[in-house]
Figure 1 (cartoon, rainbow, N blue to C red):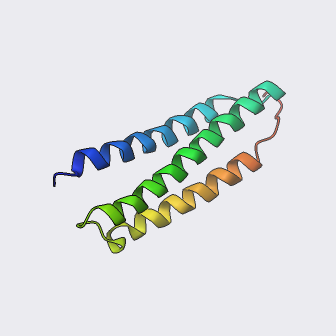
Figure 2: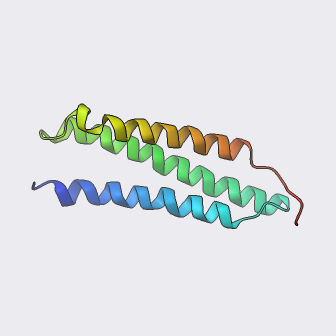
Length: 99
């Protein structure tokens, strides 16, 4: 119980970064090179935060006795899927015409 705040707060902050950067990327409609570059930049920041989140969860398994791989397996699977989706999102970002 003593690790709850010190270990979960950084995890929460990283998840907030993922969500914020995806939100920022969605607000940039790529109608020109500048907006496309900015969108890709935000997506990259979300990917980096997601990967850091995965690494932090792995550290929790090694450093906290009450955390086992079984408890975090489903979360790890979801984060890996999210990372794959974000990479696809970045790869498919292209300049679009305004509607």
